[in-house]
Structure formats: C-alpha cells, structure tokens
Length: 347
Image 1 (cartoon, one colour):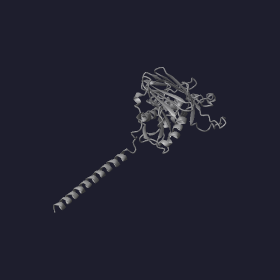
Image 2: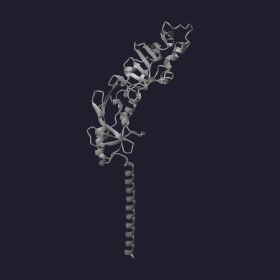
Image 3: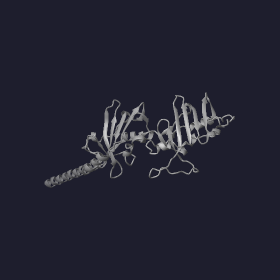
Image 4: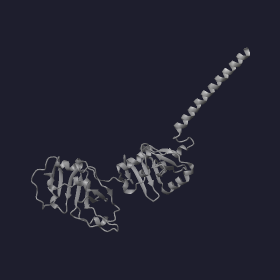
C-alpha cells in the first residue's frame, strides 16, 4: 500500500512539473511573438547607425549645397536668420520651409532587400541629388544622396555618401517623394515678391500709363498726409480734396505682390522689352530704395518661336514685369490690379 501511495505521489509531482513547463513555454512563446510583432517595422540592430542617420536639427545648419547629375548646383546660405540663394537672393519661404522640414524629420521607413541594392545604388549614382549640410564654422555635418520614389510609392531612396547601404525614407504623415524638396534649381528657389512694402515705408509712388496719360499720377507723402497730382502737365488738375483713407487703402495693395514665375531665360525677353508697356510703376522708400517695374502685355510665342498676334480688343490677363533690379518676371492681372489705380480714383 505504501508503495502504491509513493507511486501515486510521484505521478502527481510529474504532472505538476509538466504543467509548469507548459505554462512557461506558453509565456515565453507569447513574449517572443510580442517582440517580433512590435519590432517588425523597426530597423534591425545589424544596421550601421551612421549609415541611416539622415536627420539633423536645422538650427545647426548654416549652409546647404545641392548638386544633381545634370550639372545644376545650388548653394543656400543662412545670414542673420534669413536664407539666401548663393548668399545674395532672398529665397521663397515655402521652398525653404519644405527643405528644412525634410532634413529635420526624414526617417528610415525600411531597409530594401539586399537583392535590390545594385539597382537602387545604380539609380542613386545616376540620378541622385547630392546633399551637403554645413555648420556655422563651415564643418560638414551630413552628406547624402536623395533618389527617386520606392516601389511602393511611399518613400524615397537615400544613401549616405560613404555608405553602401541604401534605405527607403519618408516623412511621417506625408506620402510621396522627398526628392522634390531638394530638386529645385536656380530661380525656382527665389522669392517671387515684386512689391512687399509696409505702407509707412513708402515716400512716393508714380504710375504712368503710356497710352492713357491722363490716368497717370504721382502720390507723395507729406508728413502724415498724402498729395495726389497728375504725372503730366497736360492733365487737368482735380481741385477736390483727396478722399480720406484712399491713399492708405492704395498702399495696402503693395503688400505681398508676387510674380507667377521668373522669365530671366525667356527667349523673347529682348523683344518684349521694346513693346510699349501698359503701366510703369515706380516707388521710393524712406531708406532711399527705388523700384521701377514696367508691366508689358504678355507676348505669346508659337512653336517655332514666332510671335502670335494678339487681339487688342481682348483684356490682358498677364504681363511681363521688367524690373529695375534686373529680373524679368511673369505676373497676373488679377494679382496686381490693386496697383493699377487711376488719377481720378483718389477723389
């Protein structure tokens, strides 16, 4: 009887041990499954950290150099908190904002399969945009290449200059190519403002209409008041007083007046400059700055470079803007109509 009891106790002990082992196995299996699931989208520990560390705090960056395989080179320099193209021209706020957002928030989305490395690196070598980011003292902070969109269309291929490991990168909450944020060249980076003046900074404005001289005028600031006179002696003087608030209203129209695009490479630029302008607007600012812009009716050009004759009876929706500071730009009537007041409109 005693032997039977001992055998029974031994069997119960074995059952308990087996039960404990099964429970431990299930717990370990659950932990392993959780780890695999939560880390499946993360870079593996075998990655070289330096080869995937693309992001950087924009406050540390004082110069950006970009170069593509077609020979375009762009240098953006930060001076006194303002980004300048080639250290000279004001940059377009949106263009700089998108670029800085990219260098600050770019993240690795996934590591491509090794079998895809040759084709990806070949494309990066052929079409990639080189990016060099420099610090305040001129030290190189980052150097990498930005390629095209990945196969899923959800990110962009990037690779560090000294690495052979390409990665698919992205910005959170953004689907598409990051390349467009680095691919602009020349005037595409530039601020397109023609007029962006604070009313209190303007001393005088003259507007000449070569084909309607009686509509031309000059407005001057005299202390806290404004005078408005005809630009040409042949125009009868209006003896009424300038309506209260009209000059101030007019000056508001010179804020944030942007061109549609630059046309510095326009093939018919020299000819367009010979066309009688619709209006010539000149400003003098209190710091001595003078600006003059000639608004020339847009000249349409055919496929073979010939001018297309325009119907003079139809309204003009666009103008070439020939600027005194050297730029030739394209502007829209709808944007600049607030600038084209007439002499009698102040009374």
